[in-house]
Each structure stands twice: as C-alpha cells, then as structure tokens.
Image (cartoon, rainbow, N blue to C red; front, side):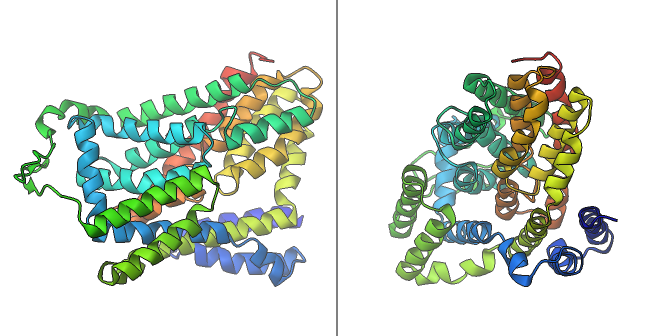
Length: 428
C-alpha cells in the first residue's frame, strides 16, 4: 500500500478514536505524525517540527491573552454597549455588521486571519451577552472576511490572479471577487435564517438595550439591569492597544499574533492585577487540538500526499469530473491547511485540461478559489480556530463539534453548487 494512502487512513483512524473515546485529537495527531513520518514517510523529527504551526500558535495564544485582559478590565463590555447603541438596539443587525466589517477589512488588503482575530473576539462577546447563537456569529465573521477576500487589491485576490497569469490562462479579477462575495453572502444569509437570526429580528423591539448615559443603565434580554460602563485608565489603555493592533497589522503588515502578545505584555506591566489571570483564560485545549492536527497535515505535505491526490485527480480523462473533484479536494484539504497554499499548488494541476477548452477557465478558477476558502470556518483552519478559541459561555467540546459539522456541510455542499453554477456553463 502506498505510504500516501496509509497517511490518509491514519488520519481517519485518529478522527474515529478522538470521537469515540473523547481523546484530544491534537495529542493523537502528534503521535500519529511521529509514527507515520518515521515509519512510512522516511522523515526526520526536524521534518515533523517543520510542520508545527508556530504562527497560528502565537495568534491563538496572543489574541486570547490580549482579549482576556480586555474582558477582565471591562473594555469588551464597553465596546459591546457601544456596538448595541450603534445599531439602535436592534440585535438582529449585529451579525450583519460583523459580516460587513470583516468584508471591508479583507477587501482593502487585510489577511483573512488577521481580520478574524480582530473582529471575532468582539463579535463573540456580543453573542454571549445578547444570547446570539455563537455558531451564527462566528460563521458571519468568517464568511464576511472571505466575502471581501478576493478583491483585486486583497491578498487572496492578488495571489490567485498572479497564479492564473503565470499559467497563461484567461482570468477575470472582477468575476473572482463578485463570485466569492456572492457565495459567502448567500451562505451567510442561510446561516442567519437557520441559526435563529429571524427570531432576533422578531424580538428586537423587546430588546432595546441602549444605555441611557445617565448611569441608570438599560435592560438586557432577561430583564436584569446592566450598568452603564464608562472609560477609565485601564480601558483607555486597552482601547489604545487595540487601535495599535489594527493599525500595525492592517496598515504595516506586522504579525497579528506577535503584536497581540506584545500589547498584552505592556498592558500586564501597566496593570498587573488584571493581567495576572489572563494566561489561564487562554484556550489551551483548543491550541493543543489545532496545533496537533496541523502538524500532521504538515507531515502529509512533506510526504507528498496532497500532491499525490491532486495528480491522481488531474489525470482523470473526463474534464468536468476532474474539475468537480479538484473543487472537492481544494475544499477538504483547505479545511485543514493553508487556503493560499492549496490554491497555489492545485490551480497549476488544472492547467492542462483547462487549456483544452473543455472547461471554462474563468468559471473553474473562481469555483475552485471560492471552494478552497469558504470552508475556513472549519475549527482546524486558522479562522475557525480563532472563533473556537474566543467563544464565550459555551462547552468548547460541544462547540468544536458544531463547527466541525458545519464545516463538513460546507465542504459537502459548496463545491457541487459552485461547479453547477460556474463550471458547467463553461464561463471563460
């Protein structure tokens, strides 16, 4: 049996064991990575450690550490009150505001994980305080950032358009952008309806939660008064730190995890009492889970498993079927690995049959690019992991399973829908 096939079967076995025995899958995947890499892949320990997602580790720890401080000193509660005031107390508008902010940030050039790291902690605090389904709120944030992710000046858009140009294929940056925006907006609309958004709208008049500003407070959904929060020294310092985070990561391209960690350190030094408890608020089981799985995915890449599967599909003699399978491979693998890496690796594999003219290149490339990114709500992707780590007042294991199921539905349904709408008509 080829080692590439063995590596896939071991991953499936890890899923089964983690699900049936409630063992942390991150631990299982670290052990599996060691076994598969050394016994079947001929790789060294250094090769295994090369797959450890150090950047994601720092993002998860840094962002949750920083926002733990913000929660402890009341900054997030202050932001929540102002956000509710902004939408006039209409709670149903909040998920769409988060969607719009995420789309705007990525459309003007922010990397998707950086945008999610900035928006998700605030959004999920809002969800916890105003009883919005956290899966609804998390999905709206991620799909919002993906909706703007393929604008001509965005990171994703620039990379895909460059790959297409270098491959000598016709491309349309506008179709790519509008296709991604439309797909994510439609999915967000479905999520909004399915996970209780319409009920929020019906109850909006009863949930006018705008603080009066006189110190008397407002009413929360269960009728208990909420204190009108005001700015103090710690909150001003924290808000300043959050502004610095946004400016430095979006304006100057600095790493969001390292910046969040650095700002958290400064705040801890200036306010030791609130910073003391922050490390315990980091979602360590989630960090272990995500890092273990992605380390195993790194072993798969080193072994050539992903290329093995991609080349096997690209060699199919029926172009339309190959196009559909490539969309599914892009979606499935991207749920565990870098979306950009998958697009850069698999789009060139599709070049030979795209050049035959039997499949429209513009429609195919758009379908593939959207399929490979719309699944980033998976808890194993960077965006999904950030949502999972920042969810409040939920059973993290149960919420992980919900994200996993939702990601599975997206992987199963979206590539087929995109194939029908964009590939079958032969656009391009």
